[in-house]
Image (cartoon, rainbow, N blue to C red):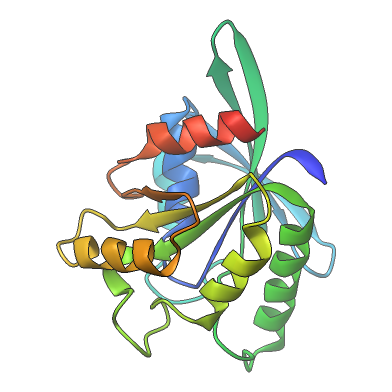
Length: 204
């Protein structure tokens, strides 16, 4: 198990990539050095400003992320600093995706989860009760929780708490996952990031 790896996992379109970008900025990154690792072994390294990363790596369409995006960050802890590799991953879906490229990216994500010490499971709190949508709470979320909750480094990030409907969604999540640590956040407005940082520091 890789001690300093923190993987962000969840269904497609729940806000994983935007969280990774804004969380890195919250931790003091001005320029993001993003290593993109594809299922076929290809690797690319690119530099982005925060604005460029948001424009080029995020999208409202599903499965914008088709590989792993790795970003090294440094988290101050007292007089020391801890290095953490934050990994954005391909969004999961219910069932089998028709495109081979997406299927391989999803397999890559699942393999990573087996090896990572810290797993941040993102759920769109505003869509929890919207049955049948790509980003609604689904069986895959229960499977992730069942697999990952045995680790101390597992937490659920209830995203999009800036939306009105998320309050009911958060209450539903607390009822569905009573044994899990749930952090309400807004990836867009950087809310709840201190709690996420503290959780990562405790488990790295």
